[in-house]
Amino acid sequence: MAQNYKTNLKQNIRIIWSGISLMADYLAVLLAELIAIYFSEENLRYIDLFIVIPFIYIAFIAAAKTYRRIIPFWQRVESLFYSSIYSIIAILLFFFVRASSTEHSIAFLALLWLASFLCLIVMRYILKRILDERKIFKIPLLIIGAQEETLAFTRSINNDIGMSSYKIVGLISDKIPVKGLENYPLLGDFKDIEEIIKTTGINNVLIAIPYLEQVKMQNIIHRVQPLVKNICIIPNLTAIPMGGIDVETFFTEKIMLIRVRNNLERRFNRIIKYLFDMTLTIVGTICISPLLVIIAIWIYKDSPGPVIFKHMRVGKDGKEFPCYKFRSMCVDAKEKLEELLKNDPEARAEWERDFKLKHDPRITKSGAFLRRTSLDELPQIFNVLKGEMSLVGPRPIIKDEMERYGNHVDDYLMVKPGIAGIWQCSGRSDTTYQERVQMDSWYVRNWSIWLDIMILWKTIEAVVAKKGAY
Image (cartoon, rainbow, N blue to C red; front, side, top):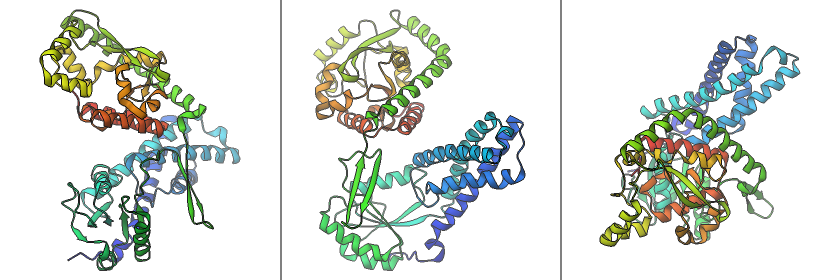
């Protein structure tokens, strides 16, 4: 028997959550103001401290629709990032109009922006953790469909704190649920939709059946919409890049227009990416220079020979360049590889499939550690400084691999290869070669500066966790 979720509390969870989030944001902004005042030694009027500045922040956060939308955590952070920037600009204009702009220094505003951005993230994160641990303010969600799309959505709910507000109460499907959805009750077939929604009193439905033909999909949407408050739909748009999408609705013609931007074709975006690379790389090189020296000494003592290994890779527009790495193999690695592939059919098959060996006898003692921690790739920062690579981009490949990219090779050649990439934070060596190709293509077609920031952060997480390393 399906549980009934039609209670006043569960019907109004979104409103309650919005109010709690608003109060948390107010406290976060207030804390940020106090931090900025403390370090800049400036004073604020009480009305500015407690009302004007928090109101400006909350107005921009609300304008981004973050109080009612349930979105992945990184999208939430992105929204708070831009809301903080817009708020600081508005505060500066407010002070200027009030003829008090000279009362507050740039240092105060810079501190306020940084502190507010961090406090908003931390406050939202802590609040969400507390509520999730106590399993309160969960929004009951009914999912129509039980195939791969539903499985991907449930993974997002389980792995992303931003999506964990949903509680899946059951599935409705015309097919046997795929492996991984066994823990969710199958409540019925498509013919039972109306009865199940009325019985459960559910108000939020996800329709995840992109495999269904358009007429049948339209029929299900029309049946569901009058019975619930909110419908989410996973459409069949796998061939369309998701980054930089705008949607226009032509009501009179009853059609929807999807406008897709090629972000990396815009000169301004390429300049932003270049400045982002150079700034982080210069600062990072200065910070890690002692580590580079220590690693170089260790490599030489462990296996005398060149410390840096140069290997030709294919860059932007097909131009080859020497890709730098700390040497992690013995000096006669080439001969050892030829001998291994000649005498070991399994190793040869693995090499032909992935261009890598999980158990590579050529790797030195120091090299094993460097590869496991990805420290062997640190010298590629000099490739970035030379303009041959980017901090984030497709995995640099050798010329022989280009044919394996097939139709995706043009995507690879559009951009500079990167030290970090989406495949590295999605399993690293646990992913198949074809999956890595598709990830590289997806990155190029969906690029944004925020995507680069997210990939760098998740790559650090993957390296620290040693996820998929070898």
